[in-house]
Length: 64
Image (cartoon, rainbow, N blue to C red):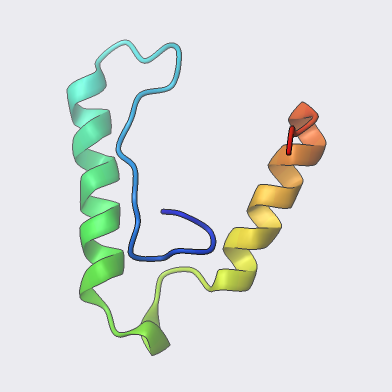
C-alpha cells in the first residue's frame, strides 16, 4: 500500500521467499481488505504509513 496514495498497492516478492504464491495471496488479501473499508475504518492511517516509511529509510539508509 503506497504511503501517500492509498488507492495504489503493490503485490511483490522480497528477495528470499521459499514459497511465494501464498505470500502473494496474503498481500492481495490485505490490499483487498484495506480498499473494501471506508476511509474512517482503514487498517492503517496515512500517518502510520508515513512513519513506517521513515523508519525503513532510517534503517536502510533511504535514498530520495
